[in-house]
Image (tube, rainbow, N blue to C red; front, side, top):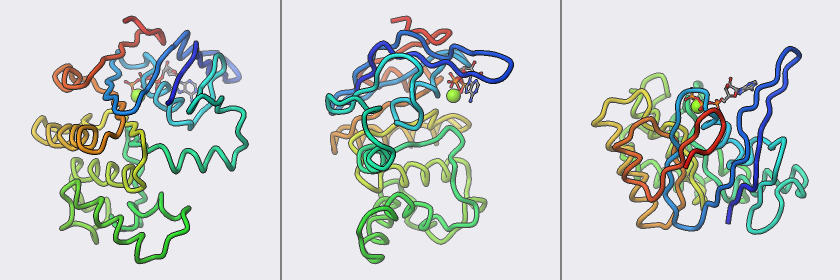
Length: 221
Ligand SMILES: Nc1ncnc2c1ncn2[C@@H]1O[C@H](COP(=O)(O)OP(=O)(O)OP(=O)(O)O)[C@@H](O)[C@H]1O
Ligand SMILES: [Mg+2]
């Protein structure tokens, strides 16, 4: 359903060009559970941003359900992104002056739902990640693992078809990391959500269906 065809990404600044990705071919199918691995700077976050339609490639094509993403206008694109994709950022990106509950409701603000339904969906999503007892806390009052779980609750609250998670277990101890992986596995197995996860942890990667290895922006497997 989501496909990268010969995709490349060059970041251009005034002084230099960085080829962050080159010649990437990748299909994300319904029910897939994929891991993306590679050294720091190898292009993992860039790849995830392209899959998340958060950025455009400078070469090649991104297709969603057989249609080129670049053909859509901005409004359609943000609509598609909101409906289809959940994104967990490498650094959480929680809004500091909103409560946990309000943070999780954010993706639903763009949908025609009543406040009550929005609230119920957010509470259910927080229940799924085991945070029902922290809904009125603020991000700064949570541990790293709890903040990570809020970020996941926010990414899945709108029932996306694809969940993209950038190092969801980075900076966590192995027990908390294990809990996060168990949540992702359950979303994948029980709800058929496709999951693409960046990880540095070989043990976690081995629990996915397929590992995509990047080196200097190229796929090496
Ligand atoms: N906005 C940007 N402008 C210029 N160069 C960038 C930008 N974002 C990333 N890069 C460069 O692209 C390359 C790939 O970066 P990316 O963030 O995708 O790496 P990564 O594999 O996610 O690394 P890490 O494991 O450290 O998160 C790096 O060399 C980086 O410096
Ligand atoms: Mg990264």
